[in-house]
Amino acid sequence: MATASHAHPTPKTYWLIAGALAVATAIEIAIPYIEFLDPVRAPLLIAFGAAKFVTVVAVFMHLKYDLKGYRYVFGIAVVVAILIFIVLLAVFQAL
Amino acid sequence: MATATDGVFEVNGQSDFEADGDPTHRTRKTAMWVFLGSEVFFFGAMIATFLLYRNTTNGGPGAEIFNIPFTSATSFVLLMSSLTMVLADNAFQKQDQRQGRIWLIGTALLGLSFLAGQIFEFTEFVHEGLTISTSPFGSSFYMLTGFHGIHVAGGVLMIALLVAFSLRSRLSPDHGMNVELVALYWHFVDIVWIVIFTIVYLLQI
Image (cartoon, rainbow over all chains, first blue to last red; front, side, top):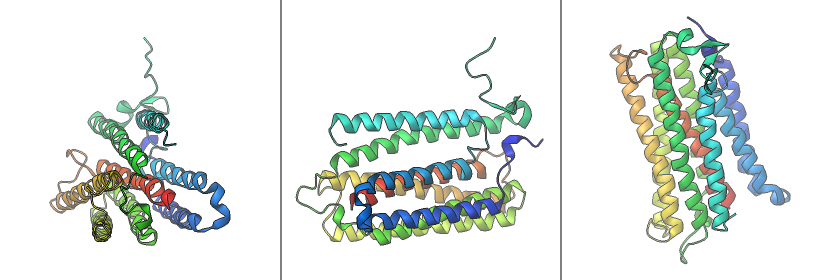
């Protein structure tokens, strides 16, 4: 029986998302070479990386369309890992 | 009695096990997500270690030897392999085995290209004096990117098995390893590289 959990995007959507990811990657690669962006380089790169990460997880891995349970399992792991990451870097004064 | 997990494994208010009619598949998929969650900690620890040692080069080469244009190209290749993988998954869901196999083979070839690029990159770095024992920077860099490479190689192997199973008409949800689970693993390997590429390469130049 067809369910909402199987209502995945069409191939056309996948191609469009891949195109957007390619453009985002090209911008990301250009950022370190643009001098006037130096003051905001790190936040910009992290923002682009995070956007690409979320897009792949949501669309290609179908987390946006699948069960909420999968979102919790993976989302909690990512959030806890980021917190440990920040605490670890702060403790060793590497932030 | 209501529990904390009520509604979590439901789709539009209907229990997914009832809606899907295939609890085994859902159990496997949940197990895969739990596994991927544990992998987040694995790679998170390695990335944190790299950041702690990024300036500890012991007088040897550091991030200045990174070839960003080359690594950008291999990153793009891996990113596009996620597209071919999702198209393979889509084809198999539509029971189009032939089309699915073509996309799977494309994914494996892109994965192998990425690995070839990584081997070339490592070889160049060794020639420039950066080995795994040169410095904490070298150790943490090779451990992180090397383990990611091993994950990519494992993914390529699983994709090759999927192609072989498909050719023998043994690729169905009844079998232990299906395309959807391997696709999840492959996309995860891709998102890990998105993070590595941003933090280890782009933020260090």
